[in-house]
Length: 186
Ligand code: AR6
Image (cartoon, rainbow, N blue to C red; front, side, top):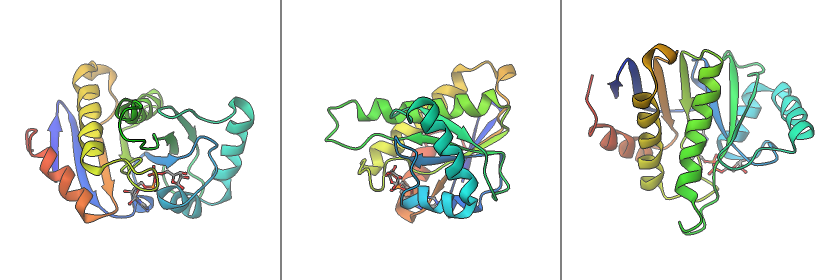
């Protein structure tokens, strides 16, 4: 399913994000950029050791990545232009600014991608696995952040024409579809 906001298509589908062939894949990483489980593990496995090596350089240079921030590596063996490693918040009950931090993940990844002239970017459902963020709130937060970014950026300065949400589990896909229906359908 997809909707169009200004000239940008926002799509949702179910699958393994490492099979997505667009410009930049976003990874749900950790502050040390140590490859872990979940989508992070899948991206490191599919992309190969080049990604970990570049993560180590970032770690040495800047001591890691704060929650809400993002850092770029190449995509190793994957065909994409690069991997954007962002660090989602660990859910602590909602009173620790988790939603604001999650929104920042989506925005800082978009900013990084756009600075590189990205035409397309794909997101997993950041923080909704090991980090325990409630799925409905995560979906609302992700879509609101992305739609706001698209609507508030001068179209002439936005290289993107596709923002994809690649959900691993069907219940997340259903949430995104439900939420996307509140926007204009293509
Ligand atoms: N493609 C797309 N989505 C996936 C894939 C995949 N191949 N595999 C899992 N997901 P998680 P987090 C979904 O736990 O909650 C790691 O160890 C999954 O179903 O990967 O942000 C990192 O190193 C879920 O909806 O990330 C961190 O330490 C979503 O991706 C920590 O986990 C996110 O689940 C980050 O936790």
